[in-house]
Length: 190
Length: 181
Image (cartoon, rainbow over all chains, first blue to last red; front, top):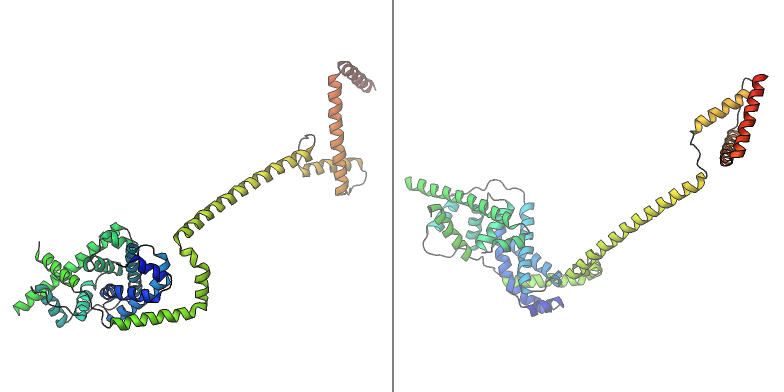
């Protein structure tokens, strides 16, 4: 991900090198933060906070591999703290438009572009009933493509708990999709 | 694969490949650098001072070494305390042995005082007898000293058969004299 030389230069306080690091990793951090929080502005704030933390504590990093895990960990922790602080929102009201969007996405054979806002809505709908930990595990595993081992290192929870959380997340989302099928069926009968 | 599983897989695949796009990346990057520069100027804050004084503890090998050293210090302290307590106990028991002198049967203080009181009350003619604590102590000490001398005397007599015989004979004579009287 990041070259070792670049990390060494940042440790010495070279802001120019750190700017390169920011340019390289910001899109990746934004992706994780956006998928977890569902809001673009919030995700941008988290990117800022994460990169400032990285700058302040970069002396702890020795290898590029450990940098990646560490970066994921900081981002996930900040998002996780935010999700826990948020008051339990009232049941998400999924309107006609949301159902149509989700239904379209599932049924479409072509891979059309999904806008940020659309992706945010879909992820919100899918993860509405998930706990903060289940949501984190789901996003990191299913959307970011991380293995259970990697997620365990990032979140600090046992691998068995990662798998358990993922299982329940998939189960709940599966039930959500069944509801969509039902919705489609009902629409068809109208 | 069920329809739900198919739909799930399709949806997740599409979401996975639809990476959220970071708009105005340059602006965000500038904001980050500006914030970091701002932090540098605040280096003399308490946080900054604390970080520069204690920042070295974040170095992994330093932290591990400190944990090891702390553990060793705790063990040394525990050992020292155990050693000191043992020494104190030994010394206390020695002091007890020295102060006791020749072993005497231990009589509870109250019983002693009562016994001495009875003795002194019997000798006195007045109905009320006031006895000083110090006097009682003196009496008890002289009684103990007499008791120890008596034991020594008995030991000497036992060791010498001729003397023993002589003393027994004399005591017998005295008893007979008393009876006759």
